[in-house]
Image 1 (cartoon, helix red, strand yellow):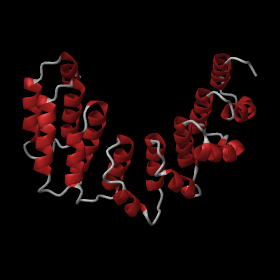
Image 2 (cartoon, one colour; image 1 turned 90 degrees about the vertical axis):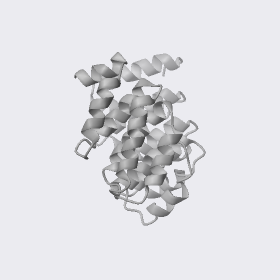
Image 3 (cartoon, rainbow, N blue to C red; image 1 turned 45 degrees about the horizontal axis):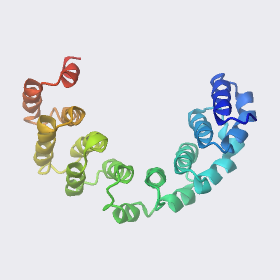
Length: 245
C-alpha cells in the first residue's frame, strides 16, 4: 500500500523471496493488479517458477492480463505463464494474440500455440514465414525443427543471412540445430554458411555462436577439420577462452 512504486516493488520482492506460500497467496492478487508494470511482471515471474499451485488462486487474473494488460511485456509474460500452466485450455487466448501488434506478445503467443496440438499450426506458420522479427522466426524455426520439416533450408538460410548482432547469435544456434534434420544435400551449404560466419564475422560473439553450431555437426565428414582451422585462425582472446575450456 506504499505510495512509492519502488517501495512496493522492493517490499514485494523481499517478501516473495521468503518463499512462503501463505504470504504469496495473500500478496499475488495485489501484485498482479498493481499499477506499476514491473511489479506485475515480477508477480508473473514468480508464478512461472511456482510448483505449489499458486496459479489456481489467480488464474482468471492471469487470463485477463494476457488479453488486455496495457503493457506489452506484461501481456507476453502472462501468456508465458498460461503456456506453462495450461494443458490445451488456453488455446483461444494464444490464438487471439498471435497477430498482436507487439512482437513480444505475438512471439510468446505463437510459441505457446505451436506447443499445442492445434490442427491449424502449419497454416499459421506459413502465414508468418515472411516476418523477420526474431520473436516470430525463432518460434517458427523451433516448430520446423521439432516436426523435422526437411524442406525449409532456404528459409533458414535467408533468415540467418539477414540477421546481425544478438539476433544472429541466437538464430545461428537454431540454424545448426536445423541442419541436423535437413536433407543431406543441403547440409554442406549450411556448414559453409556457418564456417563463413565463424571465420569472418566482425562480432566475436557471432563467430563463437557459429562455431558452437558447427560443433553440433562435428560428426559430419569434414566438420572436425573446419573446427580445427577456425581454432587456429581465431585471434580474439574471448573466443580463444572458449576453445581452452
